[in-house]
Every structure is written in C-alpha cells, then in structure tokens.
Length: 167
Image 1 (cartoon, one colour):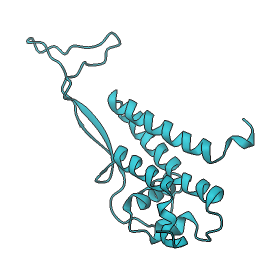
Image 2 (image 1 turned 135 degrees about the vertical axis):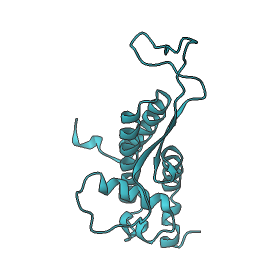
Image 3 (image 1 turned 135 degrees about the horizontal axis):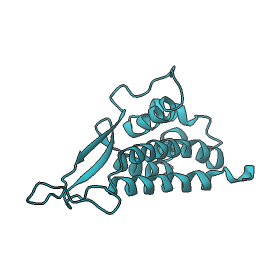
Image 4 (image 1 turned 90 degrees about the horizontal axis):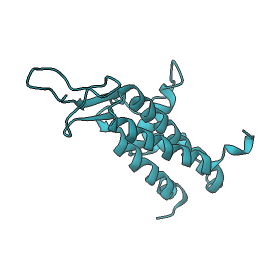
C-alpha cells in the first residue's frame, strides 16, 4: 500500500464498509464480529472529521476534538469515546459521561423439534426463527443508527456551521 491510500475518500469508504460489516454480522448473529465491526466503524466515522477538516475546512482553526467537546450532539461524543477508549488505557479528556460501552441486545429463538432436539445447519450452528435478532448498542444507543446518523451529519458539514458562521 502506498502512503497516498490514506485520504478522506479512503477513510469515508472504510467507515461505510465497517457499517456494512456490522449489518452483516448482526444478521448472522455473530456477537464478536458485530461488536468488532461496530467499534471499527465508530473509530473510522470519528476520524472522518479529521480528514474532512484537513481537506475542506482547514481554514477553520477549531479541530474535530474541540467540535465534539463543544457540541450538544451525544453521537459525536460517543464516537470520541469509542475512538479513544478503544486504543488508550487512560483518557485524559472524557467528553461523554454516560454509558457508551458496547453491549449486545439479542433475542435468539432456536428452532426445536417436538422431541426437544434443536435443528442445526450443516456446520452445527443452531437454526433460528425469523423473529430472532442481535443488535449492538453503545450504551443506550443502537450502534447502527448512531453510526448512520453520525456519518451523514459529519459529511453534511453542519458540524462546522456554528464555527464558520454558516447557517
């Protein structure tokens, strides 16, 4: 990989790929990979702000960290939390004081025969009903919804409006 692969378009595409992986692993009810994808997506979406700032808003002196710090938007603060707590043992500047730790909310109903035997796939995984689900949450917020909202909000440039005077 050349050093020019790391740019705004690459980071934005990576964030969307991670969100797609989250959807895939929630659908497959794969807890570990769903959580990993949610965390990776949060980190990538958070870093879009830095790349976007560098590419399009470098004339604005306020950095993405300060935007999150001064924002009333909890989604941005949770992204900051995920991006920093996932890589540092101790974070000196905590912006979000609620619970943002990844959690699983699931309802898995296995298909069972009258004999009580579970029906499994060829590879031994239990077959589940259509009403079964698995969702990753960051605290009380469903990760997929938070990530989709955040990426669109960041890409809209609205996060810079109060700072630049744009309305």
